Each structure stands twice: as C-alpha cells, then as structure tokens.
Image: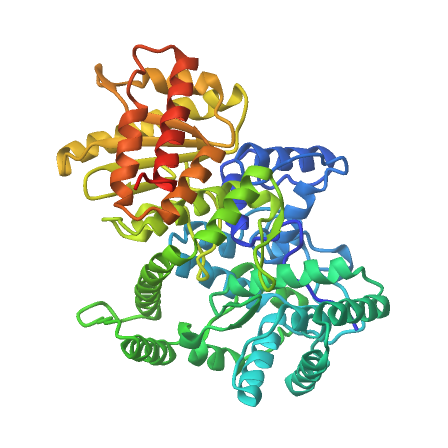
Length: 572
C-alpha cells in the first residue's frame, strides 16, 4: 500500500496557493525559483505578504515546498525531467504561471476559485511524469474518492466519510483497487469501530497497525488525511460532515458526468499539457452544461430558493458557467443567513476560539465529542472570522452577514484567508450606528506602524461614504492581543485629513481579553445588546482630550469593565 496526497502538508490550505500565486505574479523572482538563494527569496516574499508565518526555516524549505505544490497542481510550469526526452519549450518555461494558474488568479468568487481547483485536481494523477511510483497504475485521487463516496451512499444511505476512514482506508487505496473493495474496507472498519467499547483506544491501535505496515508515523497519516480533506473540499464537490466529509448534494449530477470520463492521457507530454491547462469539465459541453444548470435550478427550488436565468445569455458553455456560479452564490447566501442566525446558539464555541487566539494554542476541547483547532499559519484569518461570528451572535445586524466580512469563507463557512488590505476587516451596520472592526496579531511598537495609518484610513473612508448615504455615526473598534501604547496614542488623537479637511475619528482600542470578557457578558445580557455596545463606545471616547495616553487607556478599560460587571450582575 502507498498513501496518496493532494498538494502538500506545508501548504495545507489550498486557497492560500492563490494568494501565493498572485504575490509571485507581481514579483521579480517569477520564473527563477530554484536554488537556495531563490528559495529564500520566495519564502521571504510569502512572509512579507502575510501569506505564511516564517518562524524558523533553517532548511529553507518553505519556498521549495510552495513551488512544488504550485507545480504539482499545474499552476506553475514544472521543470521537465531530462529522462523524459521532452524539450521544456514544448510545454512552457519552468516556474512561469500556466494558463491554469492565470485562471486561478483571475477567479474572483468562491465558485470560480473552486472550479479552478476542480480542473487542476482532476488533471492531477499519481504516478505521473512529476510524481514517480512504479508500484501503482496511474489514477486520479479525485474521481477515485468520488466513486467511493457515491457507492458508500448507495450502500449505507449516506456519503459521509469519517476522518479515521480517510486516514486508514481511502488514502491508503489506489487505482489498482475498485470502489467496491475500498467501500467494503470502509464498512468493515466502521463495523469494528462501532463495536469497540473505547473508541479512542480502538483508533490508536488501528493507527499503530497501519503506520507500522506502511512505515509512516501515525501523525503523518493524520496530517495527510487533514490535507486531503482540505483539497477535496476546495473542488466545491465535497463539504464537511462532522469531522469528516460528504458529497455536496447539488453536485451529484456533475459528479456523475465527471466519472463517465476518466481517461488517462496517452503520453507524458499530453499529461503535462492537461495539467498546465486544467482538465476539461463535463460543463464545457453545451448540452451537458444546460442539463447541469437546469438540475441545479430544480435543486434550488426544492429549497425554496428562486434562481431565474430567463433573459440571461446562454449561448456558450462559458455563459452557462457564469450562471452556475451565480446559482451557487445564491444558495451560499441563503445558507450563510442560516449560519448567521445559528451563531446566537454558539457562544461557547466562539468563546473557545477567542481563548485559543489569546493563548496562541493550536487546539481546545469544548465537549466530550468536540475539539476545535486553528492551524498555526491561519491565526490571522481565524481571528477575523471569530470576531465576525461574535458580532453575528448579537443578531442585530442591518447589513447581510456576507456584507459584514471582507475575508472569504468556504462552503463550510471556515475562513480561507484574511481580509485584503484595501478596506476594513469587518464592517457592521446596526440600526443606530456603523462599526468598523479591525483586528491584529501584531504586537509591540511594530503594531502602530502596521495598523495606525491603515485603520484610520479605513474608518475615515467608511465615515465619508456613510455621510452621503445614511449619515449614521461611525465608530472604529481596534482589537489586538495587547494594544501597544503607541497605537493607543494614535487613536486617541484620531486625526485624518481628507483633501486638507481635518476629521476627528472615533476609534476605541481594546485588548483581546477585554473584548472576550465583553463577548461573554453579551452572551447572557437580557437587554438590547446594541444599546449596551453603543454606550460602551461613546463612554470610552469621553475624556480622551483631557487625559494623557496612559490615562485614556485606563479609562477605556475601566468603562468596559464597569459596564460588563453591570451587565453580568444587574441591580435588582
């Protein structure tokens, strides 16, 4: 047996590949990514753009592994081995961006991005001219896994596959095995586990057995399963199901069509061309595209979501592709509303994520059955996401949940990266005011340099736009693990010039533990939460002109703590 892996465990979140590719496209090192010096340059580029947290990298492996991941999925032209006797010129210059990579860069919506990953991963095969393995017949892990999930659903009533089943069975299978034999092994494992009195002990023993047989560490099996789950979900065909995965119901027809054509390219060069251009999809055919679109429309109607494409262009498969993406966006927007409403019942989980971010811990158990975790490189994105969820839980927004965040989330509502730098992280409109929220993990004096101008510019921009729209008062809330006093001083002054006209901005800086305490108080507060929040902001801004910077910070902390105490322990 061999374990297969989509992408690599260094770039565990596939959506980060797009950010790296965009950074690379504007850099001077594009096309020159090999050798230690260039590995360092690529690593430093990723660090400067905030795409990776560099830490210690003595082996200078970050740049090399990112190049490998981008090449493996066909977003960069791979360097052709001399053993293939294929001139590099017949494909494209090594480490330049491919047509598939350019398509990914141009994709601006989540459905479009997912289509790029679907095309890339359908083209990917193991073994290949890039990944050698003499013991396996060439196969594509995506159709292989989809076949397993469909058959699993037919035999068990559900396509759900657990984390352990992926780690110990599916990713250890390959193209030499048909779906029936893989599903048989999954169901056998499932039955044995259901009879085990101590599930954790059973899992540990199974991981020990398979890891010993394959000569991999148990943690490696888990890392591979986690990474494979993430890349499978990036195609848009798969979503989370508990700790496992399942087929997206609306995509079944498309999956059926994909599985009808899984031909292996006739030559190494044909494979490389398909990899770098992205695989064809069934919806590239006009008749199939219309069939899939109508099926999707019917699926939406069953969920009482109206999607009418009457009068819109349907002349080419590309036109249909646009409509399919719009239909997916409509479905996602409806589900995001439901997700937002559900946050009112998720105070405990949100609180746990805030605790993880404050303590810089990777994981936390919040019940006997549930453990949450944050991948180390994704702390900035999870910080924004958790604060967004905290405000959704207040359940008083005037704007839509998707309008309140500027970072992307996937089909499971998890963050895929931090908000871009050309606007606020979070923009919340309430009945009586607008709140611009900015969060940061940056500390010390670097914090003011990184955030002082940016946060003021974002708040000023919102205030100017609001003045022409509804004239609601605009406040800024700046949240950091620890707010540096230089940052406090900048926001105490709160000055911004717009065309030589001076503006006084209302920005309140708070430490994360204080925000966490506020969130805890709001979770049990029986009154109007937005009124409490607005009074906090107003009172915190008092005395900023009569106090020095240290005094104002102490005033903010006192106001928050006193109002929180009053909310938690109201006088009867």
